[in-house]
Length: 431
Image (cartoon, rainbow, N blue to C red; front, side):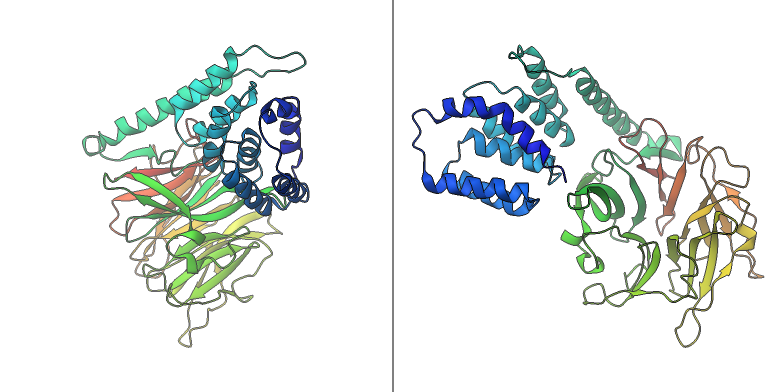
């Protein structure tokens, strides 16, 4: 629990509260609500605390104290820097005695919201204010440099998009709407043009961890990604059976009638209309053979499943396949020996026709780290020798979680190659 954030920040303004309250009638009811808000915060009930702060701001909309502390609550504990902007701006406008941290927090919030020019202005304002006795200032050079670099990345992405039709196959970073400073993985295109991804950008303050959750990315009228929302709060929300904990949507049929998940390192399966209330089931031991499973994919007809599991004896990840029997049960999974090396094979994905399987491996003479491979199912029901996809899809870094649209014109994958926005970024491939 990170309760020191608000407490530490509040100490820095205690000396100016008296100044703020000059000419302002102290309201006993407001004081009681404020103490309740702080009490809820100290107990880790951050959502309750935010609601109490909102009640305070409704009655005193120009209060520096209430807006500043609520802004910090959103900034840190609720991990919603975009929402914190509203309150930090009001705090800045109503600051009667300079609290330089406001500029720092507001600058970082603007940066997280991709408003880089505003962020740089805030960082410069912070730098220009002389520190008070006993106050330690931090350098803003790193933040300003980050903003400038991220602006340059966005400009480069826009330039690349403008030359896609001229240059043939091209790999482009999906951009800052899709990608965050954290790990963004498992891109899965839908038939409506949206993209389902998994991101660790959501912080769980109770367990003090960033949680992998599924997100839906939509495009605007210009064809560019313009909006990202948690799937639990957007379309296909019925597919999210645990919105609060680690959940990866790894595969689905085009109509979402069949969906595969990785949850608690096991494979779960949901079958039914996406509009119906259907609880997924943990697949039986014929599928969940081991203690650790990382991902699974399902063919368009819903009859074949390929997944990756960790073999504790061999100490590596391998691919397994299972098919459905006539009674609808999944047969005991078998190892895909043709697609197995002495290293790791993970993150499988079926093409739309179900005859090409994409996966990542650290074996088969990789360029470096994980590389992306494909194999085709032959008429004799054997898989072809793994074929490494060309550069620039593969790089000296880790390239994982490949997927491809049903028309074969666009692919997606995650990579930790240099030049991204976070730990793992999602890239799109235009063929």
